[in-house]
Amino acid sequence: MRRWNGWGHTDVSYPLPDTTAAVLAERVGPGSAPRDALLAEVAASVPPSRLPPHPLVSTEPELRIRHARGQSFPDLIVLRSGRVPAFPDGVAFPRSAEDVRALLSYAREVGARLIPYGGGTSVVGHVNVEPGDAPVLTVSLERLQQLHSLSEEDRLATFGAGISGPRLEQTLNVRGYTLGHFPQSFELSTLGGWIVTRSRGQQSLGYGRIENLFAGGRLESPAGTMMLPSFPASATGPDLREFVLGSEGRLGILTEATVRITPTPEREDFHALFFPDWERARTAVRELVQSGAALSMLRLSTAQETAIHLALSGHPRMVGLLSGALALRGVGAEGCMLMLGVSGSERAVEHSRRTALGIAGRHGGVRMPTLGQKWRKGRFRAPYLRNAAWERGWGLDTVETATSWSNLPRLLAAVESALREALADRGERVLAFTHLSHVYPTGSNLYTTFVFRLGHDADDTHARWLALKTAASRAMVAHGGTISHQHGVGTDHRPWLEAEKGQLGISAIRQMFGAFDPTGLLNPGKLV
Ligand SMILES: Cc1cc2nc3c(=O)[nH]c(=O)nc-3n(C[C@H](O)[C@H](O)[C@H](O)COP(=O)(O)OP(=O)(O)OC[C@H]3O[C@@H](n4cnc5c(N)ncnc54)[C@H](O)[C@@H]3O)c2cc1C
Image (cartoon, rainbow, N blue to C red; front, side, top):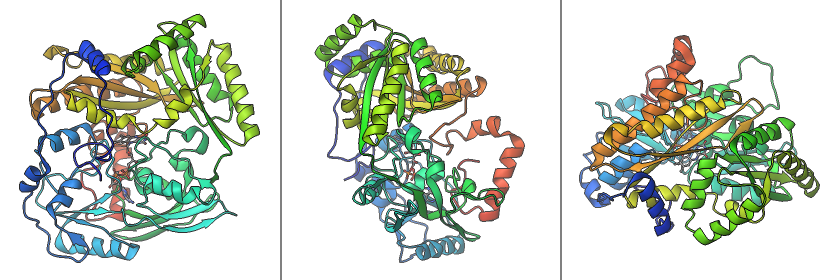
């Protein structure tokens, strides 16, 4: 069963080892866990629904709680504290495009606002219910999960857009294919959610980003149905798929999506390499991606993140042995860890592996066996750490951006120092560390994790988080970074969007939404 107030499934947890807790206590101060509200207590606070009955709509309180928020840090605060400002008035589970159209008509007739809901894994407020006079209907797409068609000849598959990551991959894998889209939220996020938030998978370098994988589909909007044919390419003016990508539930509900699939690779390797310092590591990664070597993943941690990951691993003896082995090969305290993925046929993997290790070796890169496979096994485990940290009194969140290679050092320094300083006036220390998880020939993303002590109550914790988020966002905008490389805009990044798109750009986006949704029925207040 899924947790209602944290990440993941209730039967999966990874408690923080005492050695890890000791490191956090030393770096940011001892944590003190707040009391969590019980589900029954929150259920008692759910107000009566304002929606008239409809056969597709449930007004059951627990369902309304479970669909009130996503997975952002502020979402965690309101759910854990039980102080949820607003709930959807009802939750619907359509089984077909016809059901979705019926729900759009119903919402229009009863004056409700409608929030499309995929896996609810948004970390920027995309699915949140804002308090207001109009009733709110959340439309969960979890029952739109069928495989409609798969053409081996065309390498295309069409799915219901509510299909989750694991189900989609299982469905393809048994037929010898993969989509290759593995965001860290893979366990719970959905195909439709990936498309409308422009999500990135861990192996997007090899399989392509969701923009490249999304070939077409069907969108139900208040103004009507839009079919997106899946041509291999077309020169017929603006590409309407681009309207849907990043539309964050404002344009319509994607009920079906056709995606480009790849035969399951014969071999998939992950290697861990260590470089003597950040400068050499960063240069190696840039050369690797610019070389065009067929890699599926490059994920480079700064020296600080590398040291913290090792310190937090909870295996001090193994880390000691690893550090000793690295020191013998010229990698000391400034060492930076790179995870490198290669997928394809046996021959292609061997060729890419040799090319990549050659480039890395020229910059002092040293390969450490077995760590790559270990990373692969635990690749979806990190989000559970946020639950564990909270339960020991620490807040753990991430911010992300992207910029050119030439601007990367400036932006990295600005974001990390903004975070480290953000709570100084409260006398609080913040741990901030970064990796590059998505690299391009022209630049890279930056993914920074920060850890701080929870406040003495929910308001204080929220104020701390807001100070941190604002400081990081300001640094991104001031130092040439995008406000989001992969998480989207939602509500949390909305104040910073105009700096990036300009007034004309924002106005064009609004008008485009107006063409599909003239009365502003869908997901109000998100994105713009
Ligand atoms: C632990 C964790 C790790 C994450 N890792 C990554 C990562 O590696 N890469 C990454 O890119 N993101 C990541 N995210 C963010 C999040 O998972 C992505 O934004 C994901 O694409 C959201 O998909 P979802 O199905 O959960 O959508 P939801 O959160 O349910 O919805 C997101 C938005 O999409 C809209 N929507 C959803 N489905 C539809 C549909 N069918 N039609 C129209 N609108 C729809 C909603 O209205 C909302 O505006 C992570 C989040 C968490 C909590």
